[in-house]
Length: 591
Image 1 (tube, rainbow, N blue to C red):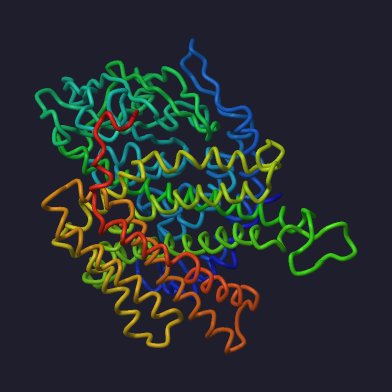
Image 2: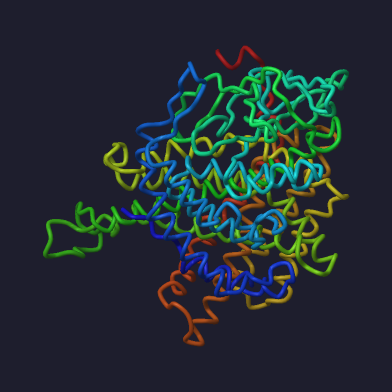
């Protein structure tokens, strides 16, 4: 089936719930009028359905191919043309800085486009997606000379960017990297080492690829405090000379086969320092945090496509009769959508997808406020929320996005297991999102180990203030008591961590994943309460899209009845501590 962008839901969220229709009142986003935002939604949906989606299956079936003689990579048929149209439409420049050729539009709009692209071809979307992170890192940390050299070409999409962190002996523990950077006489550095799992490390979509590479200077500490960041182009911009940064091969993967995942060998390649020596991790985290938000949108995008496919199948597939009597008496059987268990799978997809979309766009809106609002206190509060919620968006949206793709596949039964239907590809493609840019366990540890204590706990206090303020200001809010109970559980879990984690870090490790889920479910509950409230008001006034608004009210009821109660046992999981996790001795595992 052809993808249908969730345009009505996006407008409802952006304009009626989150207030993104007022972003144009901020000087930085004066051009982001409601009409422009609406046009972006429509045009991005058209691009995704008509240009990007047709490349998805062929990308999976063909994959990328590697030529060992030329050390070059060919992308699947149709990718170059689709990428060209993406670039010609200005989509690579959507929220990029104006001074380097960007459009300077709100980050929230990029979130919208990211979801649509990831719904229709995750592999293709990764080429411009990682480039966007490279743009942000260079813009925030690069010298003026580096910005002038690289940003305009990256923003235009004429060049693409990569993020080179992982090596054969280290992934999460980047202090173990061995790639070296030796100073050259001309102020550049000779980069030597091997990086693995590099997305877009080599391909044929553009003429030049700009690698951001973590490496160690001579005499640097053997920890993450000894890591520096370098920009290493495939071709030197001034001379056009080929830099010895070569692809050594492609990874053979479960999914995202149209994305070139490369082994990259840097053989004395010329690089230039980005930011300060030994401060590479802070510069890289600018790119990494952006990538984590993008990966969250990957989870949501795949889940949306899985929902659309499984809903269409369930409405057409005839099997058995409804338990309450025939619904299609003139046909041989009823559509399977009448069966409660099929509805359970569809409702879980729909309600979580819409809740996750709300969480993502709420975070995107806060990101826009953090850079554009004239009030410093508003900017700081918004930035606190973005920092806190980034690991939540990455982990929860990819965990539940993958689960929803599985539920979509289950709706199709045996058909979902075959290549005749797209669900099996969605499941394979979605699996990686829980792993790369920091596994979801690492996201949970980042939340518990760093974000909760950052600025003396100010980040989590900002979230508590957001939710308690809503409850105080809205005494008639839908599902107020349920939300109040979830917030209490989140506060209790936070207090438990504050009391136990400093004395025993393993307690934090054991509690991290359930804590992240409590936070995600609670914040999504807050947003479902807001959505239900707005829907009720509009229905009372006879405004808006009646089926959408009535659906929102039913969906909110489902969320609070069927999904929010998970918070209760997650709190128990945390409060029972690490003991049953850590009690096994080595011999117990294989007894």
